[in-house]
Length: 480
Image (cartoon, rainbow, N blue to C red; front, side, top):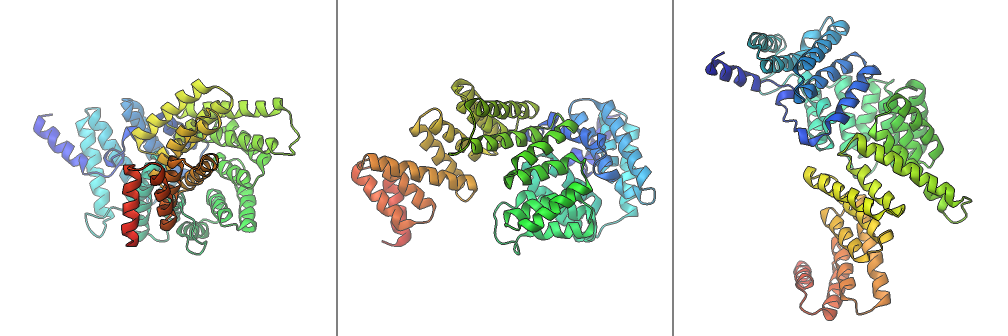
């Protein structure tokens, strides 16, 4: 093939909508974990026929990224076979993304003729199933793109939500797009308002109307309802989800999370253990099991708890074991690393704790993700296990600076307030403590209290530029 022909073919390939053109950055996900999840979905037959075909097509893309071109092609063949087997009548439009992937794989295999033939197949499908304009994609493409983003990384959840929304604009009654949109909303809706105003709750109910036997949606809706204290309906949904799909490990993990949040730790542990028998390399299940053992240990250590040190030490060992497994299976699992660092500190292993936190900070900074969580856990470690109040305050403040309205941000504010008040009770001339208290009031929008604290801080530390700047801004905002 001449250079000109290669350039023309590559130009056409770049106009396709498939995994190769969706801007999936390798550094944004953990490929070993992603491949494990895709393989288990195929092996366990999850997602019915369309979901299995989708997993094969997605898996092919991950194989390409590893340079395994023949394996990638074989996975695409399996994806096409699955679609043709279960959708004989309308399989063509369901293959549009898979054919795009084929075109790219054959291009990289230097089989120009086959690459061109799959390009032509994609064009034929577009002619047979036209959209309102060339700038609007077929609903199947939006849907496939949405599912891809959902599985790839939490950084892509917003994009997934927009893809499903566009798919629904064209096919509002399609249950698959409604389910995808519900999951995307569930994962991106962080602030609780009221149950009537929650788009996630509304869409989860809509998805369940269209697919009344979808146990995943039942479990997710139960988690949402529990957050709004609608426990009776949530419990009914959980029971139904377990009866509908008792052997689905993805349903198991959501139900286990529900039980843990409701304080039924033993039920959660039993379910998670059963899930791990099916998916032993699930970082998520190991992480959830660690959180259960941590909660159980906290309960046993409360005043009035009848337990021995040996029992609580054994539980801490289980927490550490499952967090180590989670971090090993998914090296980019920031939450697991942060919890592991804190657990090492509780076990007295300060050196290992510092090493794990250092890695967690590096990954969170590189990914620009979950940095607040790492700061908060590191601050907890410094305060409770390394006995460094100054470093704890530094990282609580950094956590609060990153975001004030999240649960972690509010925790940072409360911790800083508690530490500052204690320091002032010990030393009424502690200017730094008054400055911290001023900052906490400022982030909460309590401007007059903040001014009062900053004024006290300046009396004890005259000329401090940070306090002067904050005080000036606050006074201007109140026009004092």
